[in-house]
Amino acid sequence: MTARIAPAQPPYSSEIQALLDSVMRGKPPLLLFATVARDPRLLTKFLAGALLDRGNLTLKQREIVIARTTALCKSEYEWGVHMASFASHVGFTDEQIVSLSRGGAADSCWTSEEKLLLLMCDQLDSNCTLDDAIWQPLKAIFSDEAMLELLMLTGSYRTVSYLTNALQLPLEPNAARFTP
Image 1 (cartoon, rainbow, N blue to C red):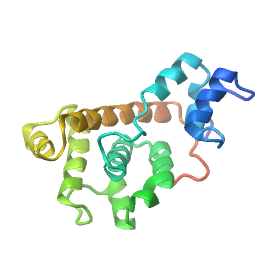
Image 2 (image 1 turned 30 degrees about the vertical axis):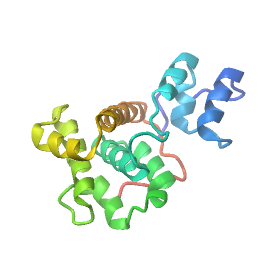
Image 3 (image 1 turned 45 degrees about the vertical axis):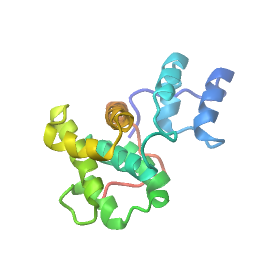
C-alpha cells in the first residue's frame, strides 16, 4: 500500500531534524512523523500535544488506553507501533494483547482498574462522553489531573488514528499486527 501523501524526505531542515531527533532518539522517523513533517508548524503542534512523557498515569495505564483507542479506531499502524515499543515494557501478556484488539473489559486477563480503563475507552469511542457508571469508579481511583490526561490521551490517539487510517500509511516493518 502506498500512503496518500508522501512523507518529507531527508535532508530535513535543522528545525525538523531537531524535532524528529527529540522524539525518535537517533532512530529514523516513523512514517507518520515524516509525513506530518511536510509542514514544520503541523509537526511542532503534533509533537507538542504528545502525552508520552511521565504524567499522571503509569506506563501500563497509558498503553492500555492508547492500544484500546487505536484498536477501536482500527489503526493497526499506531496500535502496532505501540505494541512493538511498549508491550514488553509494561508486561502485557499474550492474552492481554489479543484482548486489546479483539476482546474487551469482560476478559479475565484484566484487573478491575484495567477493566475500567477499557470500559472508558469503549464508551468514549461509542458515545464521545462518559456516563456516571464509568466516571464515578474512575474518579475513585484517579485524580482530577489524571482524569484530564485520560480524556486527552484518548482524544489524541483518536486523532492519530484518523491520520494513520486516512493517509493509508503502510505498516511499519517492525510493528506488531492485529491478532487474526
